[in-house]
Every structure is written in structure tokens, then in C-alpha cells.
Image 1: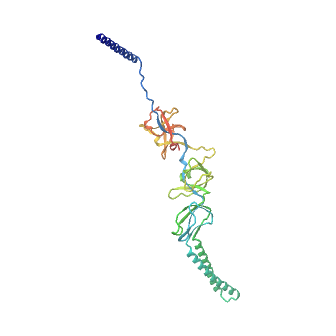
Image 2 (image 1 turned 45 degrees about the vertical axis):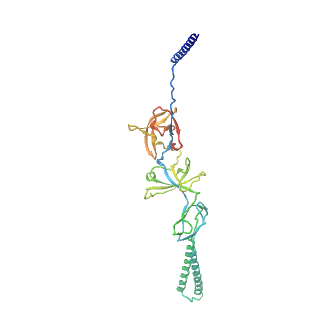
Image 3 (image 1 turned 180 degrees about the vertical axis):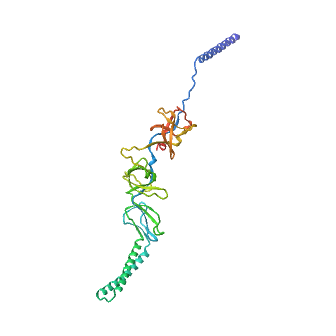
Length: 368
């Protein structure tokens, strides 16, 4: 009985092992019949810093200038003294004739009082001598002339003392703004040392200095445009006011002054720098150039230069260009590049022809 049970158990185990073996074999056969597809990684598209090519006015006839007030003055005392009153501060608006500062005037007042007293005494003597001479001729003509001279000299001393007192204060010669104050109160100051700068901000102008080659060229016209460095992307209309016909002995350039026609509400102040370019006359074509950052132009081993141009499909193309003169950190492109195209300006060493990139622009590297 026991032997029969053992035999039955052994047969069951053999059947189970055979079933498992057949299952594994069938799975192996099924796997061999299917093709395993490899995993393909998506290509990485690198970002590229680019610049849109634009045409700019040629700067061969552009000049840097400085804004100034047409009416301006450095104000100072005409005598030495101790400042005891500074009546205005920087930025204050003043009117013509307004007192701006005073010196200690006690000595000048004493001198004026003495001169007036002397004049009063001599005037009495002069009037008496004149009456005697006219009525009785009791004094000679030479005596009257001597008294008259003393009287006139006394009047001159009185007038001079009055002027010395007037020199102890500074008054505004015209209406304007106090642009700068050079000294503090209660300090000893020498005559003609600047105390204030006064300028009229209602009438501003730009002064530029141009070389003799431009003065002798055929450039004509009295209109120009100015771009203030502190106010970019806006051109102000200028009109010619004056120009020098004698060169500066140091720089050998000629001063040209142009006035603003209309500030259009912008706050322009003296001392701001401006770039001045001639205005385009009617029917006159203005020369324009294409420039790129110097780093965007890559030299090859054959002495040529090329740039990487981004196409509409965002794929880069190596293109050889004809370069011109340098202009600060940029270079002029004379041929084989068109306005509106997109050029890579950073990371060119890792690019290859036909490579797809993701263009990125930066406001600081746009064409100027």
C-alpha cells in the first residue's frame, strides 16, 4: 500500500516538471520570433545666442558732443572777503537781479560812509567858492578850479566806495537754474573764484568738434540729429547756430554749435553726452552699413572669415563674408550678408554645418 502511494507521488512530480519545461520552451521560442527594437535618444538642440542683422547709418560722419546751456555763466565775487550768506542752493530757480550770496561788507560800508562824508564837506566848500566867484570875483579862477577838482575827486571816491560795496554781493544776471555751487558758507574767498554756475535750461545746445577734413569736404546743410546717451532710441532735431573758422591749437578741430529745436518733453541737462549725425536731406540717400560683433566673425586657416547664419529651419550654415573696418567692438560686413538674417554671436566653436540650434536673442547684443 505504501509502495503504491510513493509510486503515484513520483509520477505526479514528473508530470509537473514536464509541464514546466514545456512552458519555458514555448516562451523561449516565442521570444526568438520577435525583433527587439533599440531605444533611440532624442537629439539635443543646443541654444545659440544670435543677433538680427540690421543696417545702421554709417558713423563716418557722426561726432560725439556735449550738451550745454546756450546762456550760462560762472558767477564770482569781484573782491576778496569772507562769505557770510549763501542764499540759494543747487537746483534753485532764480530771476534776474536776485541776490545769491553776500560777503562780510562792514569794511566796505565804512569806506562808503567816509567817502560820502568827505564829499559832503567838499561840496559845501565848492558851492560857497562858486557863489563867491560868480558874484564878486573875490577868489581867482585858479582857486575855483582847484576846489572843483577836489570836489570831482571826492565824487569819484564816493562812486568807487559804492562799487566796492556792490561787489560784496552776487546777483543773477539772467533768469535760470543754479547748476552748481562751488563753496560753502563762512569761508574766505579770493576775487573771481567761482561760487555758482548759472544756466538757462530753456535753451540748450550741443557743441561738437570736427576735423579739418570735414570742414573742407562738400558736406552741406544746417540740420542734424542728436541721440542722447541717457535717452537711447530717440533722435532730437538740431539746427546750426555757430561754427569756428579757427582750429583749436591743441586738438586741431573746429567747434560747431547746434541748438535743439524741440525737446519733446524729455529732460535733457547740461553735461549729457550726445552723438550728432547729419540730417538726411530731401532726395539724398544716406550711406548705411552692416556691422557685427567682432567675436561673431570666425577666421579659418586659409585667411578667410566666416559667420554662422541661422536659417528658417533653425539650422546653421557657414557663410564666408567680406569684412571691413573695425568700429569699437564691432566690424563692418561689406558683402554676402543681408539685413534681417540671423547670425550666431556666441559659442561658434561647437557648431557644424546643418546643425539645428535654438536661437536666443539678447537686448544688449542687438545690432547698433
